[in-house]
Image (cartoon, rainbow, N blue to C red; front, side, top):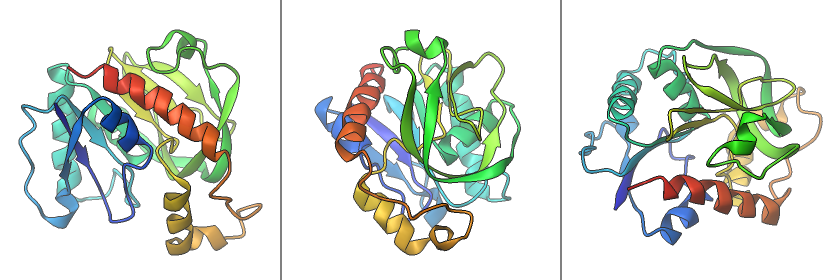
Length: 225
C-alpha cells in the first residue's frame, strides 16, 4: 500500500507523519510538481497527502491548478486526502471555498481548541480542551460546503475540518519535528519580525506532540485501504 505526497519546497518534509505511515506499512511516493516533475500515477494510491509551502493557493502557478484538480478527482471517488497548512487551503479551494488573508499572521506556538464535533471524530476523538501547535501561515479559508468544523484558535477560526469520512484539512503543523522547526527558523526571515512576541522554541512540547502525531496520523492511516 502506498500514498502520494505532494511537496512544495525543499523545506517541506513528512516529519512526524512518517513514523505513522511506517507503522502501518504504508510507503510514500512523492509528487514534486513544483520542480517540474511529472505527476505520478494516482489511481493505485491508497490516499493523497498535500504538504505546506510558502506560496499562496491563489498564486497563478500551474502546478497548484493541477493539484486542485487532483483533489477534486480524489474526493469524487472517495479517496482519502490529508492536507497540512497550505494543503488544507488547497482542499478548501478545490471544493469551492474561498482562501484569503487571515486578519493576523500565525507564526509560532498557538493554542488550538477542539469543537464538540471533534470529540466524536475518527481522528480527534478523546481530545478535549486545547492543544498547543506550531502555526506558520498568513492565509485562512472558509469551510467547504458540507464540511465538519473540528478546531479553532483565537486568531484563526478554521484550524481543522473533515469532509465526508476521509478528507481532512489541518491548518496547524502537527507534522513538524524540532529539526524541521529549527530549519524553518534559520531560513525564514519571519522569525526575526517584530510581530513575534518571543523566539520560537523548536523543542516545545516535543514528546507530547510526537504522541499526538502518532495518535492522529495513525488514525488517518487506518482509514486507508
